[in-house]
Image (cartoon, rainbow, N blue to C red; front, top):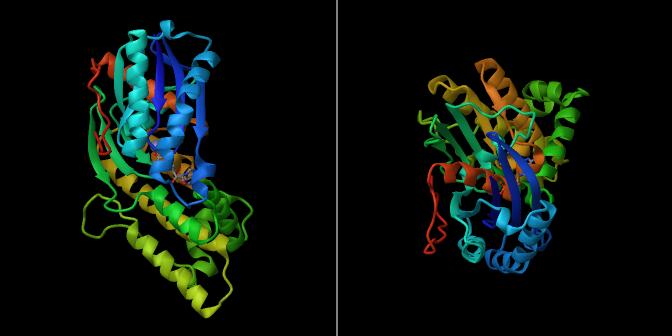
Length: 362
Ligand code: KG4
Ligand code: ZN
């Protein structure tokens, strides 16, 4: 069984071919046309520009995915496409292209949820890796999501908790922009924070530095101290707007007083609070929901500090941790093709009246 996956929900036009053999999933091709350079000029994604760029790129990206996989459309079993959630104009480009493609080659059309697709990337293990065993918890951390789901044997997703306001990736992007990291700021923030952990503690190993960070002078003096984003009302949700506002106030204070500002230590302080909030919540939920594994996906799953902390949380809870390789953490077509495989097996197939939706679909 060979699946084509098409993704256009945000700022990457992506297509990929994934092959299923004996219940394992293999990447045959993975083409991503990123629009980041275009949106960087504006400090964030401009929806209208995104839609136009998807329209320009999509035919080429799909053609390249088929060529690199050395297949023709006749070899495909189905076409998967991200139908929700995302920017509506951007989603419509992929959905309409997929509808035309499926009709032209008489293929089943499988609408896919973007968040489920991010999680499905963890199943694309090739010959070597272990596939996640349900029941498991799935953490989606991206520019638009900070959500935890309980996933059962039938791949039903039950929402456990979600952010009430900003997503963690969005908060990295916004605060990163304020300290001069170009959009999208996540990866730059990650590196800068590593530098900050090391500088603030004097430790050479970044993981040791992270652990020692709350005890270091720069932090204990409260100059770079930020509030924990944990909600005190007993609910399981996340919230990043309070942390973000406190960070903005801290930056303003530095600006007003003209005090010497160490942006790396600041990035470390912000990262520490954001990562600890997620790690603590995941730890609690692993106790509450009997799970064999934690699957982490979405662009922020690339964050080295979050990855390391979640590895500790999973080890303490005695559950397996599955994080897709860096190449499959951001938006891509492989995850869409993988989710299309599971959805198609479960009988999901759309007619030619398929529409896109900006709203969450899980
Ligand atoms: O999943 P994704 O590619 O697109 C969405 O569906 O949102 O995630 C993009 C987000 C951006 O906010 C980006 O800054 C963040 O993922 N990101 C990171 C890292 N790499 C990308 N955030 C933290 N650390 C990283 N290393
Ligand atoms: Zn995404």
